[in-house]
Image 1 (cartoon, rainbow, N blue to C red):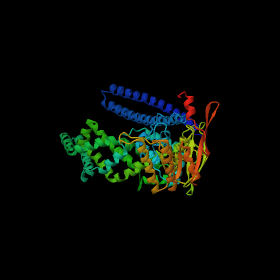
Image 2 (image 1 turned 30 degrees about the vertical axis):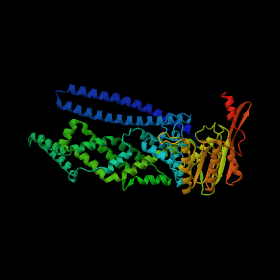
Image 3 (image 1 turned 180 degrees about the vertical axis):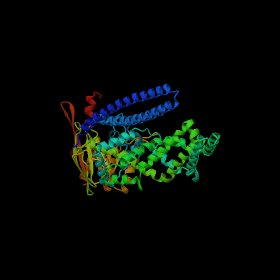
Length: 589
């Protein structure tokens, strides 16, 4: 069994060592560049009267300088990559210690109208999402959030296999995240896809060959001028002709350049990520399917993206005024580069959405796999389709530290309903969220916090944190009734696992007791499966009338004038309540 902390500490040290080595190489290359520049400048100055030698020194000096600059850029890129890996491993060590509340919390994903996202600490500060999220791109973050909210009970085993395989590739996952994190993407993928699909080509087909002919003619004119066969004035006329041809399309080229300037970093990043996906060997069918999705005939998606990235960089060079004048006047560079980009758009725009989707898929699944790698003691539920909905041993809340986590066993069959009572702070709400997360995690394909789990896939629906709304002019009680109606309507269409926490809190005790009883009776009559937590002990009487209902409780004891909880789920009805004791203990009354 892997030891995640040992892995992170070992690789943190090795990547930090590599960063230090690369920093020294960068320093040496900087000194060498300065030395070469100084020697070349001195040589040109010394032999200035002998222009042939000065020219040779200048050319050789420039070649060596450019070579050293290229080497420096490569080493800097490696250093940045290793620095990103250092940061990844530092973060994992930090998060393992419980320090993760400063990370992105996904609060924007919380939706009170969703099946369960508001109730079970799925999003927000200290949430499950905040704990597991390692995505590096916006689309990956959204895909991860969508997976947690999907309530999808199909193909769970396929997702389990994909997550398990990726969890066994920690280096590949870290390389993927490090590569992705190095580029600050300005434009979302959705915006790029929409732009590509609605883009209107403006260059005529003649521009496919005209720049080539024009460049050939430029070289002929330059050669004839050097040989004194034609007048140098012709070069000037030819320059203005090229600028005139380019000027016809300059507004549209400017518009294209402005748009592509915002997306080039995205394509550069995605090219590198697609390359990592293409060159990895996967066994899980879902991963192979995603790998196949980015293939196009005999061309690799990463190569196709690199072609566009080079064309975008080339078009970006037009911002150099001297290069723009002579490049367009003599070589029609703007037209040539724009045609390359438009040809790419025409050929591949229908596939870009698929390629972007695969990149975001691996970004999201890397986060799920990372969570799996970090919890080697968690188990993948054994997926069955039978009447036993959940049979879990050692079931605990995944966000509680191991030393504080108290686990329970749970066996709940189809069409069975548990009523859970217990004193304040005894563990009822934590237990409800534990069961809810078991269902959500199992449906996603994740391992669950248990020593064993037999699970028959079911969708989840909850009512635990109903709120009033001043905007909608709805009271707390009306909001809760609306939520309960939502649940009743949902279970008429398909089965759900229902989790309720102290329903009908917005009315008086007698009315609440009567209403709660009738609601539970309706759920049982509808053959619903689930759990309700309550302080109302009268609700437990239903067990005597309906075979589908069973009572469980969490206990609290007062020992030596102190409250003690064992947080264990037990069969029966809670006898000890603690509100009065706490009021006295805290000297409130």
